[in-house]
Image 1: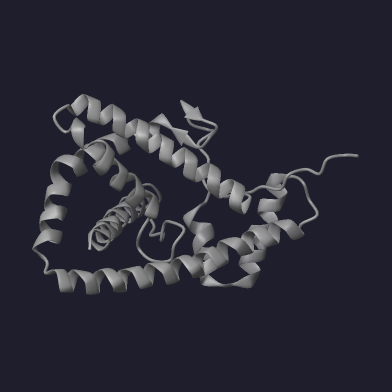
Image 2 (image 1 turned 180 degrees about the horizontal axis):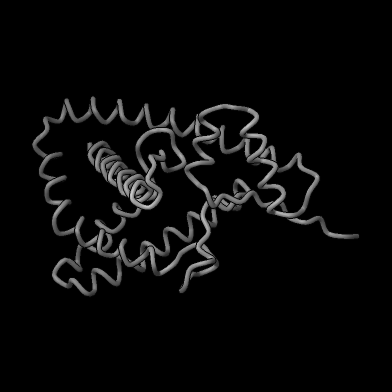
Length: 219
């Protein structure tokens, strides 16, 4: 039962993250973009980060400064690890902060982490009490049904989305080019010619996407 509750809370956090990402794009680019790896309106990296913040930093509730610093640190670690794993798994750099100050290998940057820190404080002090109260007042049998439906949708979404992402990797492997920019250009061109909305959605969601192809070692 605890798994169902925490999974629903994870989805709520992920949904919140999606709204943040979409809102940021609307504000800066004046257009709607379905952000994130998955097709549905959720960004799992936010769900993971906020769950970990809620579990690991609850002892800092009475220490706002400590909570802020630890939230920034934890978010930086999570974003860095996720970026590293995705790059190694799919040979693709999905975001790059190299052009921003105070970045670490282009995977995380202070400019983004500061708002995350304040966002985590908002979650801990305001949003969490509301979410946990809402989840706890829903009858267990209804909660289980909701959780199972959401889990099935989430798993199906992951399967479809990862199939699409894997296609990017396969495209890159077929290209006889070593230059990252040329490989990325080829993949983007192929996606445009395929004229498939799900592939184009992913490209639009990550405008900084770079498909990486390591140079072959000379014998």
